[in-house]
Length: 294
Image (cartoon, rainbow, N blue to C red; front, side, top):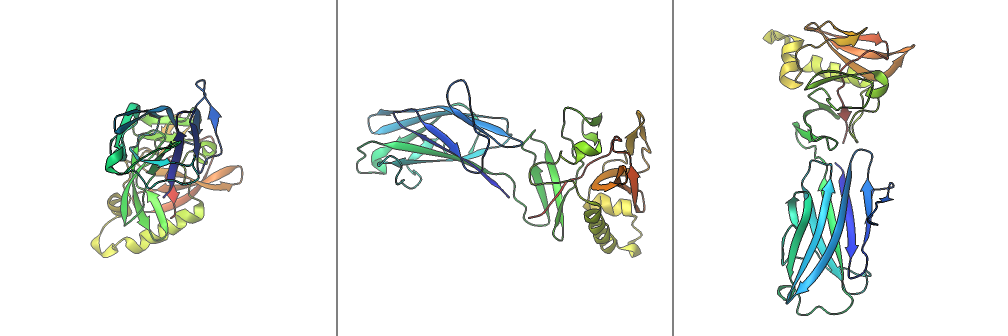
């Protein structure tokens, strides 16, 4: 679980924007800073405020390519940021939990309902954050912040696996099978998982295989495929991409590992009743399952 945080200061002078957990600051044409991480970018700009009677109206634009709602808190300082108030409570509008991105966002603070007076060189601070994803319990959902796609996940001991094949579009090194399935070359597979996730090694696949062997109740007559359908969600067996065509469709599901093997790399084939390890040419197209740990 990772919290992303933006902190925006502004007063009657040009405001300052900075972020924790960020080393990739830039400045756009308007002079406002933007914040980007490896896989997402979001920008707060056009922040301003005005006082009308006993109320202060705070405005901002929240521009992002993250398909996510945000938590917004607003604070004030009377001493140019040396100390800050607690999060404002008598405030309404685009503040609090579940705020959608957009332009002309606004919050209205009823000053005298929270403070008996407010004088001096006042500065405001806006904090924008979201919990990227939480992993609690046996299984749940994960949203890839890069494109908003939702994946199911399942826990096996210390491992957390995606229950769906990764379907993130990259500029090259992929073979698009259909709207929900993508094959990747090995070099791309090494880098394509979302932040916090990674391509599992051959050893991590073996741990999963051992877990599956303990899970499968052979007396029930279930096959590996039937058990995997219940606990690991596989799409129809899609084979893999090699020499310009899709091979072994309806026979196997083929996945990359991060483990090199000679001039190629190790892959995992899952058939109707077994797991197997195979060397694959790195330019072949295979499916990707991502793994993470808390």
